[in-house]
Length: 319
Image (cartoon, rainbow, N blue to C red):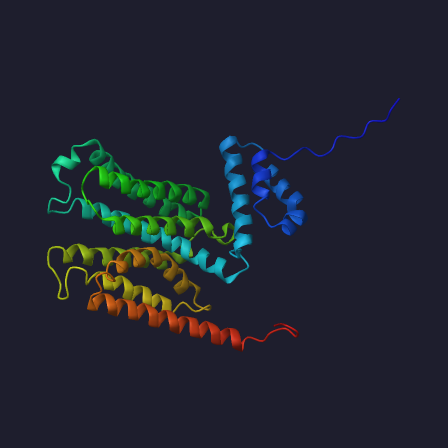
């Protein structure tokens, strides 16, 4: 009678195998069994959607290791500080955009609003703020799986704005504006999804920072809305320079020992890029000033970081 070999360990599910391949080979060889056990425990009573979500979390962990955005690195820690504030900026921006759309001045012609693309656009503008408000509430309670899912859905809806705007004939010919919208949407979603999950939790202790960020963003958008009816000295785009100024101040204070300021810089980056890019062509005095302010503040921040790195003691034999 031949002796049969005992059966080997069960083969991991396909989604888990795909997620594990996202890790560096050396890390995967050392921790594959541990990650598989964690996945099995987390998905014991979960359905297909829960197993897929857990696999995506493991894949995201691997991608953060490959890109240097892990929880033990400075970049990952800055993203963890920036993700809650990014949700705050996106929430305030989407609410302000809804108010802007329905402000007096016939911004949505009745002929466009009555068409199917126009109706879909209005529905999109109404749903997106709700998603971000719910995401902000989830940030407050530390439900980051829900935050990521809501942020991904809101990002997709924002990207859907681009074809809907063209089909509704509301803003024809604004290819630069469409590109900036895409960049801002992708940056927003990327920061929230890339923040290390193990550094994220309930943000009640950062309530003041989150509330202040919402208020700051609403104030910047309110200034732009008011300027549409009461033009300020310097032209209709002068309020865009406010974004550059706030971004530059946050950048100046974004030293390593001020992770909150660095997080605010990351959170403001998509809106700052979107607002200030329109000042550069044609280049106006306000645009030139905004560009110089950002460049100078960025140079100062980089010089400080270089000095700290040079002053930090290095281990013997380090290059």
